[in-house]
Length: 343
Image (tube, rainbow, N blue to C red; front, side, top):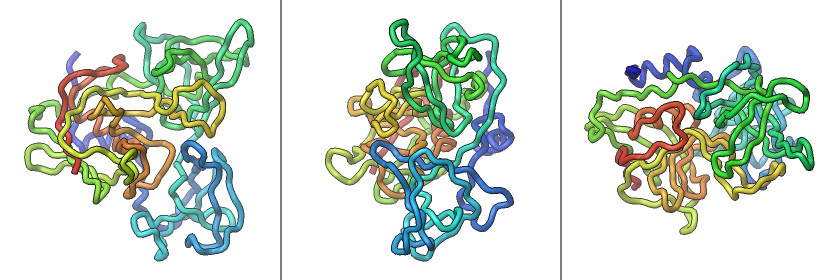
């Protein structure tokens, strides 16, 4: 099958029309929105709540707390003179303000159920704020495991009857190879065309990526031309968590990755990042990759354990633009890929 060619501009247009990822988020807009936006209190590991302040200022009075995975209506975006400088954006919520660091915009979209699944599995994207995965065993019946979050991606293996007697998708965990299931209407089955490469006509040797740790910025080049730039969050500035510097190549790529401790659990505070989307590994030995991030919104400052955190739509663009190119049914894409320089 012939591959379509998309430019960066084409990709943005298609995404905005809903033909690519779910609509791109514009956090540069300031002011009051016509409709409230839904935000989930996110955070990985032991982040348990966020503080609602009287004013958009960390030193202002804390009015109340909202717990992890609470859904908050946000009415307005404010650029605060009180910072923090690298990310001065606050949200006006009921009764006060909250910094956007641990808030992730979400939607609640229910989907039609497909009647066929590709024999190699099919990727699906979660389209609700979160959904509880369930695992079945003959000894215990249905038991809870992970929460799967909005815009995470997972491998669908089958359509089964869930504990509510409705259609559920059986998913295969990328890391542990175990199977669990979620309501089918909570997941959008991804089309093969969503994996069409961007600018495949450009010679692979002309593409390169530069990541600046000091600027917390990623830049993509075709030859000497800058075609893409975005804020990122690299590893924390301690020896054990710092993103390695040097020259690398992308190999391999995973459209869906289970990161974290690799434990089977229903504890939402466990360090389990299931279904991390659009991962491009450039130092496989230490597990260092660029990837989409659903657990924070604090780009422009180090946040990770070594990886390069990106907004999900930016990570998708990078995945499709870089080599090696893959198809919608490849769980891992190997090959000597696009050059990456970290400085």
